[in-house]
Image (cartoon, rainbow, N blue to C red; front, side, top):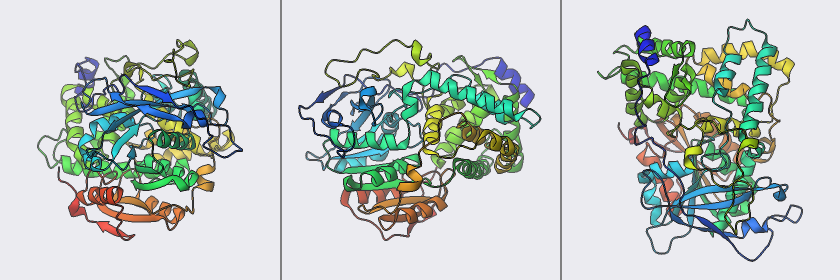
Length: 552
């Protein structure tokens, strides 16, 4: 089968476009931002004056773009590139919202869909039905964080991931110093293609952006729903602005303390469990492209990934699709059981027709592929509209968001949040051991996750703020949801983070499967909505049963 597949793939059969449910629409139309006349600083007197950023209001208008809901509105907010030195330049961030159905909403609830690297505008647009209940009392808002989507998107170039995998995925016979040199070259390419925003993409920066948004939305307190990485962002916000926390729900709770290398191992193990569960389900279906035996199906997936690593196939978008691209696509399709039929169809397209369009859509997070941008110093300077306080980075056009934006942003944020930077000698000693540990955790996802970890080599050391300061919060009660069968954020992280945050944390135990619970469990969905809308919370330790999950 694999030999025939390679021939079909090299033959270049491609679909003309992405499936509509994954095609990425544009995020913003005619939008503007108006500055008020006052200039009060919104932070302490020992910090630079940020008054011009806090004295904004957002002008909302219809979104312009492909297949976006007609009732979705778009806007922008401007933030400093560097909060320590606001004079260095500014960034424009893309926002979107659904208006409250009530005539007198209580304000806004802001959503972050995780990643890091996920577009909030796209998540809100295509997750519309999940969040309409919240519009009973709120404007429901999301945003593309700095470096993501249309908000100054970062890129590492077309071949960054493959080069990192080449450096870390060999048989251990090459010189590890050459591998680390190659990783440093990749880090330099990321900086070259991304420009100055790359150095200011940590969660602490995004949390500060979130507070500027809160003020621009006209809210005294931040009401917030964060998923996966979005829970890390919510926790950092709560630590930095405890008196600005309104109703905050965190679903799929991230770790605040685990080193990045341990996070990668946990992720590889969780994704492998999810893949095993998916293949058990798939092989009970006649349409399963791997037959009806689960053990054989697992072997076929491993062989397929390795075959594509050995012989990548060209795509219509000017890059080669590799086995690690496939691993990333499968990982996206495993996040919820609702995605399993989509993943099954995409894999069938690939194995039976040689058509990569379905797995490409999954691998890119549903974004339409675009080439990597030219180096930052070769881009034409943007001309900002009159009246905005920025002079550097307007929103990117939708067609200019590079295909690798999601993984490039993920690495930028994770590295910025991680203070561990083993020196070269330690990495040389550890690389072979790490490779073996990741391979044991998952032959499918291990190399992919290891590459994400070691790509921090060559980047500046990250902040220790999250580990040192995000604890013992003095905030209103916060709802933390952990799912027992979560492939990305283990339930143990919910317990650890709740203990770390202190008495403010109220835990809901979701005894189901999939990454996060809001989209798959009626019980979790209802509990989160009841908290955000009415302020009602269950006793900490309450649970939602597996029987509450929606069926495929």
